[in-house]
Image (cartoon, rainbow, N blue to C red; front, side):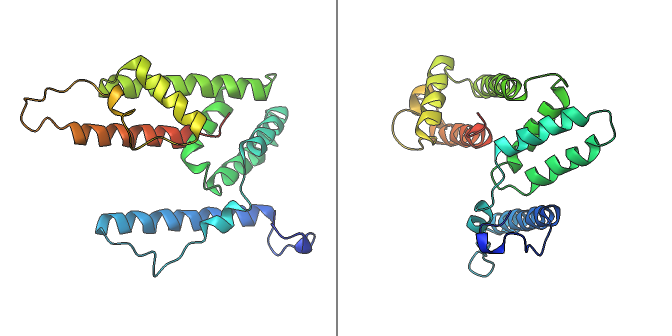
Length: 205
């Protein structure tokens, strides 16, 4: 649980308490960040959140899937409720999994008790990824094939490219003669949506 081997066996907090405190810490971090955004003034100089320290004890997808396997084995026996609560606490205490919580919960609800969890997870995430990207393409009128290539390259390279001509190739055509054609606004809207999509699915499979 702790990144320091010297403390092994002498932990002050249980793993459950640690995850609860970590979750509260991240909630406060998100709250102060949203307040700063609303006021257009950063307060990070006054309130420093050491999120990098939390990442040293990061919960990963493999750990969650291990809990899901335990949950399925206990399902219906009464012991499954505590494991389900442990899954939620682990997600809430993870900086990289919090924005994926609904995906993980839907997976837990949908997976059958005799399923191979790893294989089911890969299929589930692939289907959700396709579904959500198709929705963005439809909502924004993007060029479907070009957008899928753009996104595949982003997952390969580890980031959505915010500069260069790649993003403009996926946008719908805009008349140069229309007043305030909104090309810049459209580009930023699409970048924001694709960046959120990328953050949501990156590292899950």
